[in-house]
Length: 134
Image 1 (cartoon, rainbow, N blue to C red):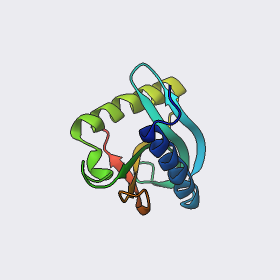
Image 2 (cartoon, one colour; image 1 turned 90 degrees about the horizontal axis):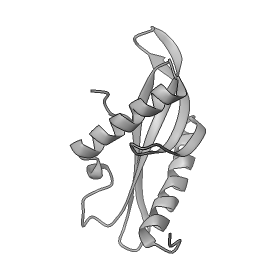
Image 3 (spheres, one colour; image 1 turned 30 degrees about the vertical axis):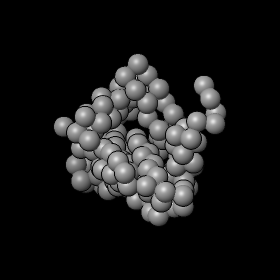
Image 4 (cartoon, one colour; image 1 turned 90 degrees about the vertical axis):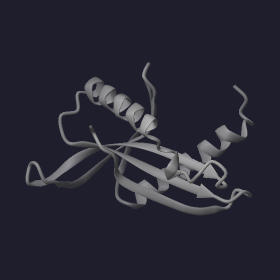
């Protein structure tokens, strides 16, 4: 594994920015880079948020996919969540929830980090409930 791989470096930098963004938004980071045979979850967090099913605030498990893009050649960071990628995220999320024994509400968020061609930060967007559990 070559540590000077520009794509891996960009991904690592994006994850660090996403961590700070999530923490500033009040989420508690509980894990990173969880892997199983199905795939990977970039960031695992928890957040106290409204639970409209239970009718009161609850502790949510938040499974976060970080997408970082430099330039717009292949679309924006958020546009990279294709229906196929969303299906994969759902599959990995279900696997994590089962494995961890989590019994409360959970969701899949996406943090999209957009940079220009020179690597300067243009935007960071945290989308809650970005991938629905279909």
